[in-house]
Length: 341
Image (cartoon, rainbow, N blue to C red; front, top):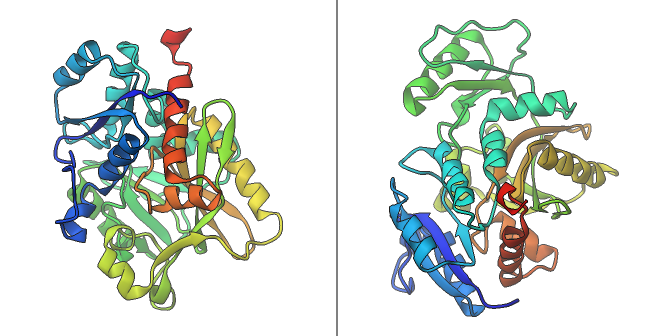
């Protein structure tokens, strides 16, 4: 691959130092993804500049017009403190006619909106748990069609914010209490969906028109499996000490029933295309004991830390971390945005 000028977009607090050997695992973990991406791209010979972004795009415009990067490597997860606003930064890149990595603005908007994505996929007859939305500031009216147990979470926040064992409720009193908790703690609408008891599966996918899917990955709950509900709480996903204490791991999904891998592959591709996604993504699904599959969430631009799920799934498929990042660069350079037409 030819050597490129790569502008890496990160949150203003996550610009990594040149070296992290002197930091603790917890300190380095704050910007591990940013460090892995930047150092790997530099090792590949690319001219790399990190740019920290907070609530202004002035410096981004100056870098684009002055330095003229071949591509922006987008690692942003918010803008101005608002999770759903990172899609507007990508839209700004398109207005500037600037190639970038990862998902396009429409795909980000559709996939980040948990309610709208479920409505779209239900129209496409892709199985998803029954759900209802309870607007913040309104008195909850519980639909009779909802069947307990139910899972309560924020309709907009990601990274498992607001999710705990108490998120699964089995009666109306607890349901109302948890809806109120989500409204107050996350300041967002509450999404309530049927709780699917089963295996938690993740599938990585890359591509614009032609898609490549990675092997199914599974979240194993370790010692929690026999004492608690299998749900990906914030501690389960992000607290490394908690993970080690309970033996929580993610690994290739083993012993899947016959036909399930092929159905997962087809389902993932349909979801990706129905939500107009591009670049790369991770799909979260649940599989019941009878092999039935249910879509949970589509994650545009998932974590690219070398030893997190997406990177490990790529390595399992024979795609090294440097090759993975270069493939993501090529997908960004080849994406046919409207201005290219």
